[in-house]
Image (cartoon, rainbow, N blue to C red; front, side, top):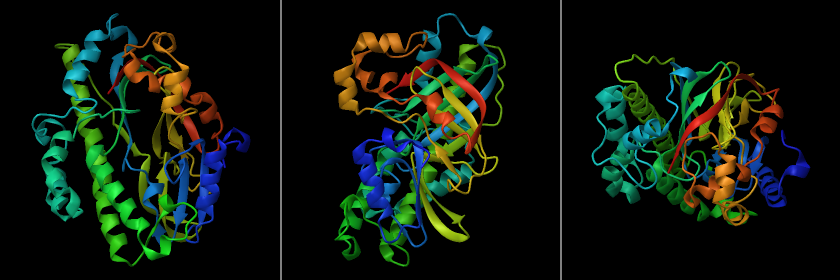
Length: 382
């Protein structure tokens, strides 16, 4: 554990004990941003040699981060950033909104064959989502709501960055929920301490079907972020007229996903739910909240952590509690200096509802090294 036990809510500790007691589990690693989740805690890494629990991945399969450093500097940005925010919001649908037509891959830097491969395999997904192809196509390149965001940030040298957080949208959620329900009905899962921890076992048709849909949704989520990043880059270019804006190599990382990796000398299925891979040299993005900054990191390859690190600040209170605790005046105060929504519609995302990001980073100094600290100047939320 990289979180002090006394700081973990009792219900989350119970979840961790239930997970570690599963007969298929090789080991559990607990990140410093750990908190209560559905079935499995958010901020946990679970290694199993011959099984996987869909709840240990999360319902937003492939949720993660993307970011890129630009050639712009703080002094290049206008004093009033409302125009930049508006351009981003016009380019990328947020909340329940979607594109009217699927985005043309030729204009968003996605290789055509990769795009075609994704859609060719749609027909092999769970039959329950076969009528969702049109919706999934129009949702590719959209943000969603909740804790998803698009930000313009500055690092310590005043260089401008773009950073965004999103996942596999509704199609990934539907696939996850269908497989979690199917796993609950399997005979080997009937006596579990928590039915939400139901697993699929290797060598079964249920496992093969889940893995196919899981990896499809992870690819969809990665492409979703890639398309959005291209749209935001274009919006930023348009904000500066004829001026050329350059971009470095982007960073992309899942933090709700499954990977087949070698752990303690054995091939394992590793689920990271609210955790990033932090192998030696792996680039990563660890966001705070909409007013507290974020980190660009590089993995140190810790075997003890199953090559993992935290995915963000992590919530310290539920959404309902946040709405009861804070008001719009608190939100305006806590997001001072950030061009963003400051209405009650995003009150559950107020910085005070999250753990301190600097403490989370400090608790995992053996897992990652800091490359840059970012502070938001624009934040777009659904």
